[in-house]
Length: 312
Length: 302
Image (cartoon, rainbow over all chains, first blue to last red; front, side, top):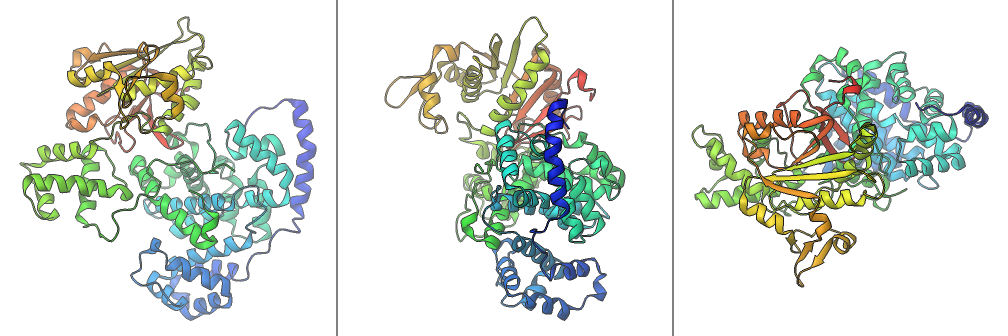
């Protein structure tokens, strides 16, 4: 990423070693909610093999998640004339796929504490959710792309930031100070102050959670797509969506002094190889459409996490 | 952390409560985008609804559907779209209209241009406000450049060229006297530093701000004159192209491409897009702002 002097590298190497060791044994990292993995399996199963009652039963096991799911399903974001009163109602009026993405969002929201963060959780979730929505919207324009997987990948791509904030609060606080002061991307600041990025720590957590391989690839390589071993187009899609979000007010809440040329990014050509229809995407209009969604993303985050947390 | 970056138009601006918007207005929105590249955000759709409303009143048209027919009928289409676009851009002008564009200019573009041109003997930057109207944008640019004159632009000469077709607008621009409305987004800091009080309602730009700007009359469709507009580093052309038809628009944009130095930038209005008018420009994003870039020679992207 950037060149650093040798002494400086030696100095940070010891910090990086220490951090790597502790990532290996993330003891105090949150466990994944019980319904999360079965839901993931459902998401990947062919629709005809999914039994509605199973899903409804699964969701209803977890009161908190069920309640959150209903709250989100009833929010103006989904434009239902009448908010659903039961999980069954939500599934019927919104469709299974929609409900699943709401659930996954709620699950993830529950995993991480709402206090003591180095990054404002509302800002973090607006970015993750924003990226998820952009990924899905983007993939709708590309024939053959898996929309729900794209949503999932966008939602999860930055979980390493939460790991950093929780496992290395002191070092990560320095990272953020550095990023804000220099107005540089977070990953660059992490590398400069900690010697590693949220991509590595995120990968460690994703592997611990047994997330599917392509999601692991996205988490590990969304800042350097060309380094990913597989799932290239998905990693490229998340990379581009992440950049776009950060340029349109859904970043990490500070000014990133940079110029982004999406169509000239290596990720663009990777995605183009798989989806030739990318050529026809009107990026400016796409950007304006994202601007339109910003308000509803803030709204959804405040619905899931309580209004107090969200700043616009 | 600091508050999230403000996106232009992202702040909640509720559509008139309780009034569902006729879906036909979304069709009109798409038509306006297709023809002019201006995109009316959903939360600002009420501006479009109001604009259409005013046109419908003037024409004595009762329903949005009838208005849609007028907008799409072959005979009336072009003229009516022009009227509607006039309605949509009324009162748009004020100083500091788009802070994200100014941030991109000062925080990213200036350092880049300064670094690229640092080996040149004459350290000179040229910015062109094309279609400057009554001068708000030109003065905003001048003030922002003056802010950098002791830092990034120390030892540099900055020229701001401001052109418009309308003589009356140019007279107003040259006078540099503005009231509350034009200054509604200008901070006290800038008002105090760069303006003199004329009376209790008006402020006038100080001579050192005026000195930076050359106002002159220019028709963007005058090909022979456009050829002479050389050596620009940045062009601002906000909400001007909408008044041209497809062919003249693309001619003007191609001129802009030649007018710019390699590595230069073209900014349009905040909700405006170049669409497919020119495929040599690179669309680039800055936080909250988009711009069209003419790649520098050393970038190897031409």
